[in-house]
Amino acid sequence: MTGEKLHKLPGTLVGITGEYLVAAELSRRGYVASITLRNTRGIDILASNKDATKSVGIQVKASQGARPEWVMNKKAETDLADNLFYVFVCLAPGRPDAFHIVPREVVARYVRDTHKRWLTTPGKNGQVHRDSDLRKFKDPEKTYKDRWDILGLG
Image (cartoon, rainbow, N blue to C red; front, side, top):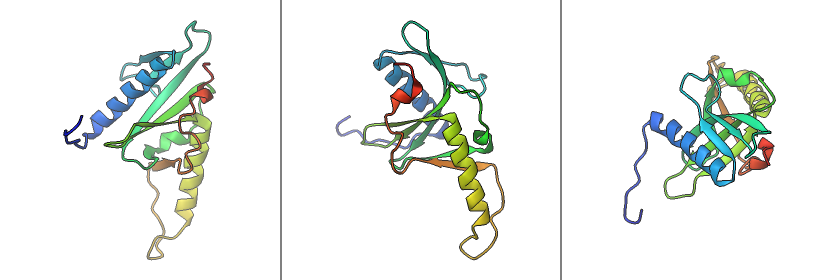
């Protein structure tokens, strides 16, 4: 891509790009990865080891930028099955893509606790924050960066 200017992607392409990058990375690591149909609620990719003795569901969230931070909605607060994971992707122009692999229950606890804290913290002019369905997940310490082992497929 030398000399080629990188443009910001429209939101729908960010999500699709993230899904294909995660599927490609799983395949590169020797796993079987299948992108689900759009109507599969809460699961973007089904992944398994080569002999299909272990499998997981993956929800992909992608953002453009280098900061490990993703916008989510209130549904992320719900704990579901043990074998469901999030893979968060940073699509930073001119940098390698970054993957953060996080168990669903960790995400649920994080977004629930940080949202509750935000609601009880006064705004910059002392006003009360209004509740909304928006949530954020952050991994500033990069605790989950490239933690493919967390999927338990190895």
